[in-house]
Image 1 (spheres, rainbow, N blue to C red):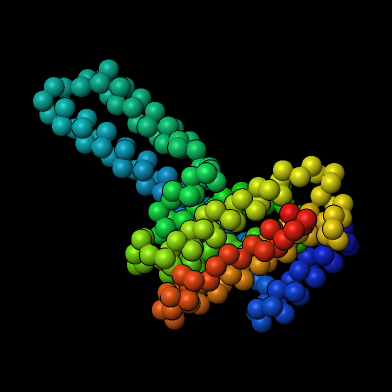
Image 2: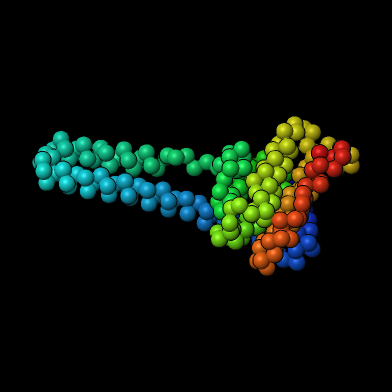
Length: 237
């Protein structure tokens, strides 16, 4: 990594600490992605185990009625192999498409948005990647808080608007800018800088939403309003 990139990331971390009063824990971000991968692998292995067990039980039941013989045993082994291979690669472990985030269940929305955002890291500049990681942590917390929240409330509508609509749209708007223009200033800011500023704004708002949910202040959350003025400010989008 170049000295410039290291200085940029260090500056982003320092800014985060000034804003939140907390230290940026890169180790936690790595553990979070590792744990997420382990969880997805565990689900795949569980599906494989259930399918293989069902095939074996069916084979035993059929064998009690009709002897399977060598051909039957071979067919069972082939079924076990086919089920294992198929479930190991299907369904593909891909993030939810941004268009589908709008319709996601509110309880699953933070997790699905976090997965989608994590898949976009390679297309983001280094300072924005650091902010995206912090947003992922915020979304983990928010997801746990939404487990018992009613879907049809003004509060959940505001969360859906920010997490399921504005955040993905903001990142995709940046990705539509040609790469060679992302470092070119426009109205005093480069698209890279606008992206980082906008993501920092979103991170703060998600954090405030979590605080209001923790305090049970749903009325305040429901009337918070729109937060992406950085995106929509005249001439800077």
